[in-house]
Image 1: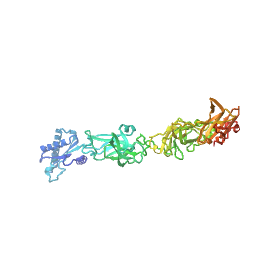
Image 2 (image 1 turned 45 degrees about the vertical axis):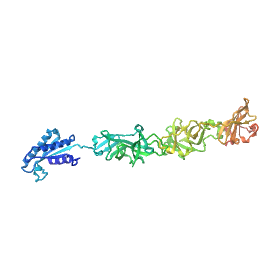
Image 3 (image 1 turned 90 degrees about the vertical axis):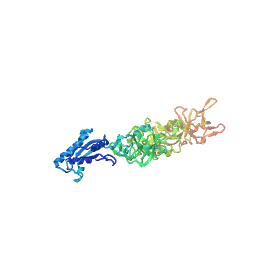
Image 4 (image 1 turned 135 degrees about the vertical axis):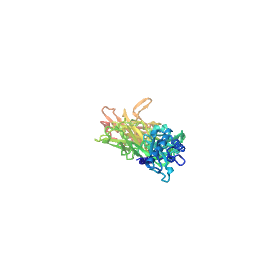
Length: 563
């Protein structure tokens, strides 16, 4: 049993054996024939090994042996005495008794054979030592760094001051003065970033071999991330590519990590270049991406104008509705000349920004519930509208004007200008993004605060015997409608005469006259200026009474000239 115990213990202890120039962790001392007294040089040997292993000894094993001269019983007792002499000496120089194990074997283990009589008269001393260097696992949350012993030779891990941390918030990156640009100024996103440093006696030291690093992934597992190392540039940390891809994110318990070998200290990160200059998002972890067309809250036109619909935009649940997004490039939802005449409105009534807005199209959302009832959006909610950049490439600052459908059925456009939302993320690469009131009606174009001057009054419309009329003038060339004012001469209003504004082509003007001067009787007339008699000297157009038609209600008007 003693022999078995000895062999197992020896195998366990023989680790980290030093080179030939260094002291070993086991040694032998030798005795005179039939003696059990330590020689002076044996005591010196023991002392030197004790000094060399100071602070590292876990246990000391002392085993006594003899040669094969004499009986077994006598030699067993002699080997015990020899072991006790070494035991007593160790104890006498300060080795704790509970750390010393005593064994004796007599002549049973002749290490040097029957011919080595003097060498077999010995005590074998084995020190079980604490490993002077050790593997070290550094762990903080999901960050793990495994530093193998010998990584920082000759400095041992136990004597090193390690610093390590991750950056998983925008604020943490900002506070550390870390830029998301490479050494050439190219911008990146990150999906994981860490710092690892090693110091000995306050001085930086470099690893001689790689550490195994598990870098926490902040977002989803996506392709295209490369491994970068951080360098100082202009007082900030910028990035230099290692040329190595970051492997797929691995699941480690509750943590998602990039796992790789890293033979450096300082900053490391998995970075992915931003797709375009328009993506100037301050979010270092990816920014907002274009929504998928298959998302439940997304509707889009055939030209891929996208609406991301907020909860509660419509009275009915979105899943129970039909919602179409329409690119109205022909402005079919705007009031044309005839509609303005029928509704009795002028252009500024339904589009007060007419002169300032150079529109390219309308974006209209047609929404109906399961009963095919039309629903308007809730202006208190915010709708995100994405317009393909190709549609606004010629514009300097494209804006959206919201519009609401009034009870008469037409859309009244606001003058509240909504500019594009920039620096959101990859979403800005292919789309111009707007966050607007969720009315569902929008006019896209450019706005100028310098309003064009209205044409000056230059002509007179004379209605002969008709007075106190409402005169609406519409221009077929630009769809603009205004109400003509009564002409005034020397401060006196002329009830049968109305001022007409100068137009590039007077023949493009259509005039609608409504009159209710007789109680209970409604009359109207629709004429083109080109049909009227013109008196050049007075710059006057004359419309006679016979042009009027009687109706019970102006809704019954039959309008053709305005088409």
